[in-house]
Length: 259
Image (cartoon, rainbow, N blue to C red; front, side, top):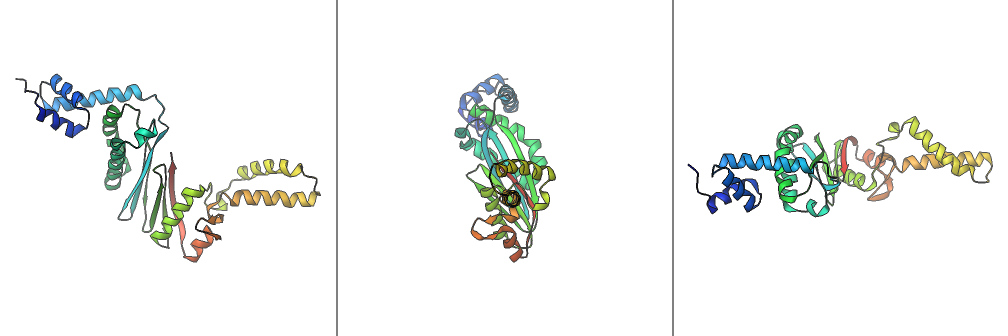
């Protein structure tokens, strides 16, 4: 026998799903008041809506980091506009996904993400996609998130969590391409050499001076893009490498992502 569709029943379904009152009412009417059937209907509707929007570009979004007990997770969620990226449903979803990742692991979060995301797609009307997600485990961790659009997690051998946070902040601001000189490939060096040589050859300096100019340009280029060689953002008189050395610390792992 059908159950009467009361305001209380609609509210209960809305509290469980977060979708609009009218969507809850229609689902309950279709399910003849059966709560489990109504939930299944809304889940299917959300999945259908999400599928229709899946080919729309989701180039905006937000990134979050949560950390506890020697573990940090970075989770990214993409959407179509900055308006939705700041919407409470979207930010609450991102926070919940990060909680699941922190407590149960990134893979568990990924396995549960779709159903949660589909409901928010139904509410916001935008394509929403789970982006890059990372997990870092270590005894000395630091993280930095800039404007919800860029995030970095740093794990150190030695040093302090405050130092790890400073290094994370530096990486977010300076965006190094390499951790140290050993990561620079021969191909990258050759490319920079060819570009720099064209600039040097255009000068009327003697060949010996041109060689020094070329070496200097290549060295400067890579120093500006190598973390350990970059001047520390809080103290330009000291490189990041020297800062770490003075603290008897070394970078163990870095995870970062920018929208």
